[in-house]
Image 1 (cartoon, rainbow, N blue to C red):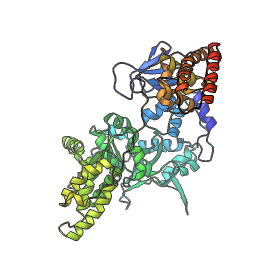
Image 2 (image 1 turned 120 degrees about the vertical axis):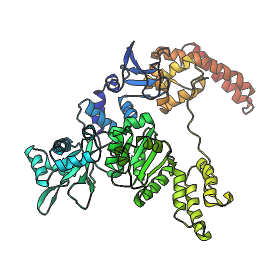
Image 3 (image 1 turned 30 degrees about the vertical axis):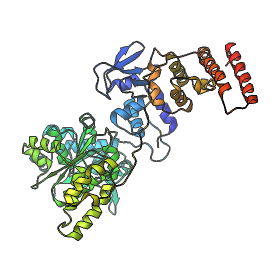
Length: 537
């Protein structure tokens, strides 16, 4: 875990303008900077960056935050990943609270460089890559390399004074009865990167006829194959812009698809798509296309993926390759238009899941049809209510039964949180809100939130420190004034006097109060008004 004081020290070394300008073009605009918002399409810049406040805000779509929030949103990273990314950008050394501390990536990066240089010298490996249709530019883009014998790898590490303990932590080498040995021996190597673009492991393909055609790095603190996708580091920006991600089964599929222009393709690492992959797939909320082989293993993996993705509300579908073909083969043979048509018209997840599961039963047999109904009814009930209603007729038709036999859950959809409505603007009230956001020590000056007539909810949010993200844009709006303490008190008095005068008028008509209580409240309210008119809150 990254130490809190280290994060605070990093923040002190960040400049929001410098960080954002590394991603998008910004221009000076008075005391601030402006740009076209990278989070929604626009021609007129409404994205404002404040060097003095170290924040940004888009007045078009409402996004905003600091340097860390920007990197999280732009690169779709978690908070720790964004911290590590920013630290690398400003050459800052993070400190960690425990022994999972900082790892020196130098050892794995240097070994990858060594493997990359060796590929062109190993004719058999290089010829294999070329024979699969992979171009030299793709070899360079994906840093394809070659791992030599165990002794050669060990000698390289030792002669370059690289830390062997770190190499073992990364799963590059291990120890056995005969001492240290390299894990990747005489294999074509495919470097695998984390979501924050750190090199964390390798995939390797044998060229010597080893029983294990493909292997991956072992599980380490840095490498968990169920939480990684091959090629994601190169595909992520294309995934966000195209709003689509293509998930394949292999390294070569990804490389060849990128080579053909499908640069939003990734692959699972020798494992089926699992629940742990979902947070990665959900980044940027793209449409997910599962593109698997048509053999038994591929169909089973596609069914499992369809069920997981549909249950979790993902949009997209399945593409199955038949006749022993895979995406890499189709690219090699120039079938780009066919691929484009396939990816543009996938079989929706729910339809694929229903059809594939029905095929496992002989529905001409009533008992088998009943079993299929039981399984599919349970699956349908795992979907959200709208999807259940949508696919109830489809399932009935597929099973050739009356739709009344299909049961769905009656689930009330939860209302989404209400967005703050600032369409009705009161500058004076918003100026008070802005001042309280900037100077929280003034919050005790607010005695009653009901003095506001338009922006009561915003005042409550600031006082309770909630929904602040939605109000951040106030800090960058020059027309909304930032009050001094005396100005704030004066404005509160101006708002409070009419409020108490209105209360004074209502007390006599309050049927819940007896005469004695009414008289007391009238006196108290008049006293408050007199004090306010004297300039006292």
